[in-house]
Length: 254
Image (cartoon, rainbow, N blue to C red):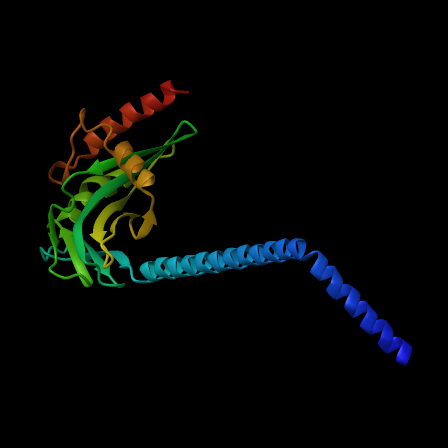
């Protein structure tokens, strides 16, 4: 036991002597270790700060997403002429905001597009055609939530139904098949509560991209310089003239 204690004391004395004889080196080593530790602590602090900033930014982005308007586009049909031949002669489009209240709604525009499908000689064709002024009367309602927009034109659905839809069905035979339908393109610009500007695009009530919106509209208006057919002068004969030009162009491009 005495020998063990003596050995420990001797070892401690040698250690003290080593430190005293090499105090400059030891001082450098200690300073270096303290510097490395400071760097490590500093890097950890920066990393934690960056992580906190990232989390705060993500929370802000999430908050902005949660506090956006939710626009819903609905079509309705009303009877304005009490004519028993055509029930619900007028198509009305309405836009509702069922989400957060924005700072401002800058504009809402709607355009009616016809989709004319043709089956002829074992080939399928699909023509898109813009109908100007289908919703000639468009008004922004003085509200930022609930119903915010309405568009209509008295008798627009009767004009479409009688002059195009019914005629198209009547002309269908064993050799050629025609079918016509329609959809509405809607563009909404608004400013949210965080002062950020947004543009939204819809095909009926389905949100689409700006590229899809513009390409669809461009396709639907490509013949407007040659032919003009708005809601007041819908004509099946005029529709077929446009269709024949379209079919010829499609066949020439094959």
